Image (tube, rainbow, N blue to C red):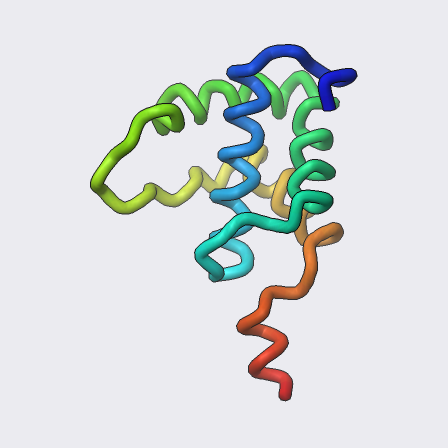
Length: 102
């Protein structure tokens, strides 16, 4: 991933964004598999508009600070829908959905 960016703030923000988005989409309290996470972060890093939006979100969400409050939902804006669409294509089916089908 370092071939796409060396900006630590950008990479940390993109990773935190993908994890939060995964939690919302999957309704699971965890992170996506490393392959899925890396694909989604790379998707963000390739697009200047997504990079700017995710860094701005990371600053407002204070991703580098420990907090006792529950996480806030991501804003459902253009960034959300673009990254969510990509993440839905590459992520594994959530465990809870698999269990409901059985």
